[in-house]
Amino acid sequence: MAVYEYRGIQIASGKPVKGVRDAESPKALRALLRKEGVLLSSAVEDSKKAKKRAGEIDIFAIFKRANSTDVAMMTRQLATLVKAGIPLVEAIAALTEQIEKQDLKRIMTTVRERLNEGSSFAKALEAHSRVFPPLYVNMVAAGEASGTLEAVLERLADFMEAQARLKGKVGAALAYPILMTLIGMALMSVLMVAVVPKVTSIFQSMDHPLPWYTQALIAVSGFLSGYWWLLALLIGGGVYTFRRWVRTKEGRLTWDTITLKLPIFGNLIRMIAIARFAKTLSTLLASGVPLLKAMEIVRNVLDNAALEQVVEIAAGSIREGESIADPLRRSGQFPPIVTHMIAVGEKSGQLENMLSSVSESFSSQAEVRVQALTSLLEPLVIVVMGGAVGFIAFAILMPLIQMNEFVQ
Image 1 (spheres, helix red, strand yellow):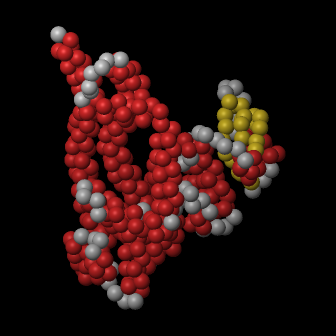
Image 2 (cartoon, one colour):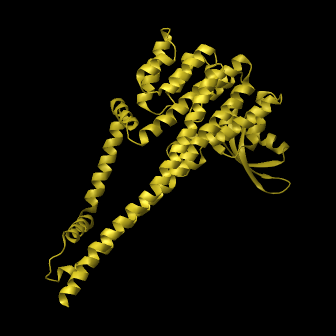
Image 3 (cartoon, helix red, strand yellow):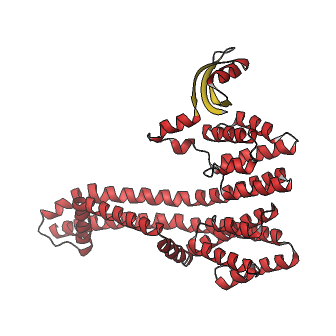
């Protein structure tokens, strides 16, 4: 069977409809839709449509793609259907009909087609790694092997929703200070380039010495007005060079190690990474994924090269017969409380529960730190902006006051 994107008209109401369906041929698709009361107007095979779009640039493609929230919602609904006793293929078929994102609808239609051909659910998902990462695929494979797919899907939905909540809270808390900083920089640029040169031009016609701060303001304004292109070129070149360096293995490791040592943000970055590590490992182990495979998956979700290296070394030590806690403790990158709780969990056979407790604790601490940080950043940004504007006003008004006193 092939997958088609179709457009048509409902015979009863005359309303236009569109969607994604699988059929053996366009003729079979037309007959299938006719039975459902839809008159087919156009149909494009998904593979041909992908080839057609390969040479085109869709500026709105990022908004059409399925994100982690869409996948989490779909996973929750699929778990409910499977738990109710509906066969997997029928559950995916029913779910596909109500998915709004065309990207995810197309992918799930392809997955259903693979299932009808005899493929396992995990293998069908593995072909779409952009939407379903290795964590998702391996948990589904473990659920299929153990016969607990509905429980694994529920864990996956819980995990993805928790990660999305943490990411959303951090992003929402930092959005206002970042926005205020960008607006402040834009206003300062306008003042220095457009306003200050016009105001300070009156000083040039007066034979009166200017204070050092006014001279400094005029010099900075003149540089920005005349050489803004050079400044933009230097900033753009610096950003490009930095990004090229960070993409290298050595550069990424060096930069991520530096970020973990930053005075305020380093501990926050470490907390978020450890919470993600603990939650992911707990979810994988509870779903039946082998420990070494789970460690490999966890290493790829940390998003920090220094911590990834620690987990990779720990996986090698585990392969040689060591416990999980010992190599993590030796690295010095994991707090003692974390390694202690992991060691206790290993000895008591409650490792998944201990990791879950670590994740909840560090997620809560990260949220508190972010809120405290943003509560300090907001007034700090306002003070810095007010100080900069006050300096400009002071540097302009003081010479005018001095000249007025001199004339009098």
